Image 1 (cartoon, rainbow, N blue to C red):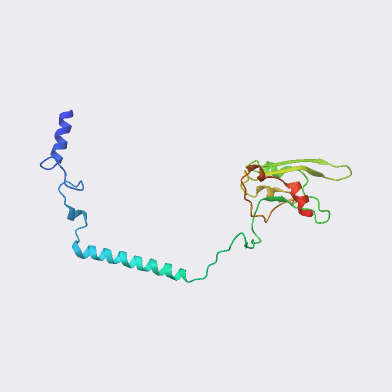
Image 2 (image 1 turned 90 degrees about the vertical axis):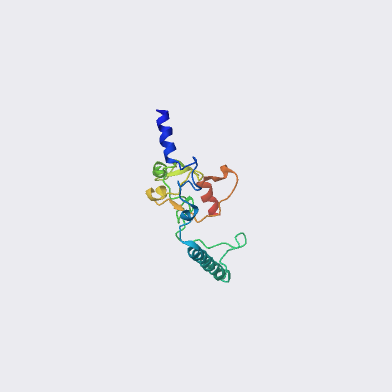
Length: 184
């Protein structure tokens, strides 16, 4: 069986037992280059050079346009009205307290399980109010399910975009404390 396969392989090779350069049994280098001759190669070089000239023209045109770069630490861009930052508690305009009733629907709706809500009904109040409202922003996917499901519109997106740091614990937000700090 092994002798038969060796004989078949030997029949495929040209005389001398070696293939021509490029692995094409008997085909020469001229066939690999496309066979068009010198005119085809000069045309290909001309098209490549023209492509280079067009690219340099675009680069040169952009070189003389005014820059739109903002020098970030000294300047900042105005955020659009539809910008969605991390979630924050919305205050009641009359009292300044959170609109949240600690129903927990945002916690149940969150696919990332990054919200913890606990609440209690205080003496003399008609509704529950949150006692703990934590957001782990490292796990938040900003999907918006919590904002959409809130029955009292007690959650909204913040306009805060400059969140950078090296400590992972700095991104676990106590939203009640942040709301009270924002009132001052």
